[in-house]
Amino acid sequence: QVSLVESGGGSVQDGGSLRLSCVASGYNTANGCIGWFRQFPGKEREGVAVMDGIGVKFYSDSAKGRFTISKDSAKNTLYLEMNSLKPEDTAMYYCAARFLGYTCNSGSSWSRRQKYNYWGRGTQVTVSS
Image (cartoon, rainbow, N blue to C red):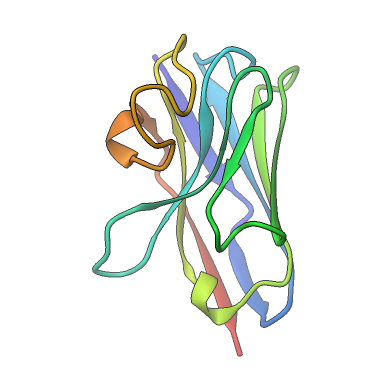
C-alpha cells in the first residue's frame, strides 16, 4: 500500500523560505514520477514541480527560479525548497505520484493532475505580507 506523507508547511513572511518534505512508503521514488501540487481555496489543484525517476524535473512558471525539487532515494523522501515566498503562494501543498513505470510527461502534460495516482493529505503553506 502506497502512502505519501507531507510535512514542513507553516506560516512565513513575504520573502521567506520553507522546505516541504514528502515521505513515501510502499513507493520507490527512484523509479517513479513524483512531485508537488498545490490547491487554492475554491480552485483545482495545480502542478508546482515534479521529477522523474531519472531526475528530469518540471516546474510551473510560478515556481521556476524560486522553488527547487529534489529527492533522497535512500530515504524515499521528496523535497520542495521554496524561497522568495509570496502571499500568492499561500495554498495547501500536496505530494503526488504516478504509477511506477510512467514518466512525468508521458501521454500528456506533467501538470495534468488526473495522471497522478497517489496523493498525500497535504501541508498548509501561508505567506503573509
